[in-house]
Image (cartoon, rainbow, N blue to C red; front, side, top):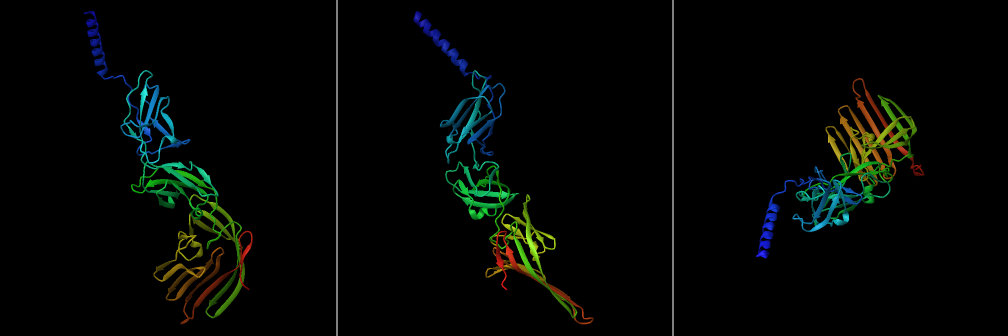
Length: 394
């Protein structure tokens, strides 16, 4: 009988304890609220680690972090239960490409753990790995690396400067190296890059890098560089009624300065007369207002591969096209009692070799008024800062 009494007492005590455990514990700490990473924010990389962060919970002395490969939080990739801060760096080696991860966090008052946060999707957008923020490139083209939770799929990488796209490409890899040819259009200044899934256009957080080099124009139709110098002969012709005059002269044009603004790469040209002209280049495009072919300095053409183009506006026609190895610009206007005409010819690696400009107006009836002016500039020498690489035939 004595043993039975003890057993009944023990059973009753067990039932009482079991009942106490079933009561909710209102003293548990609240679940922390996750900040990053999240489905919208993506990953933040620091020292080759992913930054996990959450808001603090009142009364918490420690935090526990769990990262799993499933939303049920059973297939763990990483766990840590002695975190004294509200951030934790988790090395990239804990994450596999093509794997989706979930994470949650809980706080402890030193005696027991509080509520867990709901599982948070670790990331959805591509995550940029390298180059690091603000990294500088001068001679070698940059290589871009990112990670993704896609097993298969295509990405779009976009490189921009001042909110204007300089280079964009589509690929299935998570590594992209700018080609030597494409790197030619990158000049001194700050650029930004980011990556998106082509299927959803869900973009990563952008990251900046810098380029410290001048654009190489030496092999183009616009070969500008410090110390470059051109010498021209000018033939001038004028006619007023029957009075005709002709003259010859020479002048020099030299690149005396080059600098970068937030929007343009700028070359300053100084003429032997002392006047200054400005050439503006944005990425792979050059402002050609300097040729007088177009009415606006905001007209741009590709500096490395100018595509032939033609414009027609009322009595005016203008444009440019190739004639053998020469790039020919033209501008013609005709009206009832006059005309305006300009032809320019450029060679690769040399630049402007001939400029033919003329205008006339008036009439020969009545008081016999007519006026005409023409000028032809012909290149005699071109010096590229080291050698004379062009000399006109005698």
